[in-house]
Length: 253
Ligand code: SAH
Image (cartoon, rainbow, N blue to C red; front, side, top):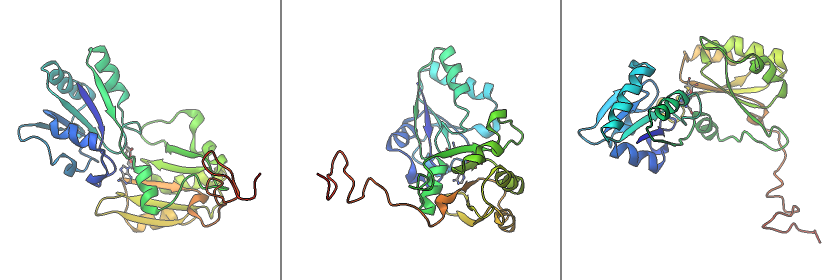
């Protein structure tokens, strides 16, 4: 049995109890060493085999996982954040299925949610945006033609941009060209929830220079949108005059 586990954004306490237990019980642990906090592996059994997938290609990862599963060993495949977001798990799951090996996925706290938490912000702010776009810039790996940042920008939705802090200037120019006003607030969070976390705040017109001044080049998430600002509507859910399935609004019949 292979367990794909979301290790969360960094702080080891931000892992699910299930993920933690499966890591502690595993005979073989393969983790994405470039981003997963090694602290999450602290409870591993003394004899557990621990491998860093940063130094392995897909065939090598599969060889270790399939070999261990065939011997009846328990395998923890540990991904950063949540495995469903840029985790490259699909290609692993499909190969396991081909090999007739069972697997399960244990979700984790994605860095885009940890980022909102450290900023104490809500992506779905009433009257501002009810949509979150999770995306990335085209870099060495392509993005489908219909999902170009320029086109996504048109909605002025709350946006979380992964894997792209190396292209801040181009990113901001594209977002403005696509329709966000230049004064749209932006935050860049480096290593959210790690001890070395840094928060850089600004607008689409000045954030690139600020990020450069902080020497942030990787492991950072960029979030963009009016949800970072101070204007919004109060929610209907907690409005004293609004009736919900649980509560009758004041003044309603
Ligand atoms: N599955 C992960 C994302 C992996 S892609 C998740 O759900 O978060 C790697 C990218 O995620 C990084 O380039 C960066 O953009 C972002 N990232 C991962 N951990 C982060 C953290 N602690 N703080 C800020 N960004 C992070």
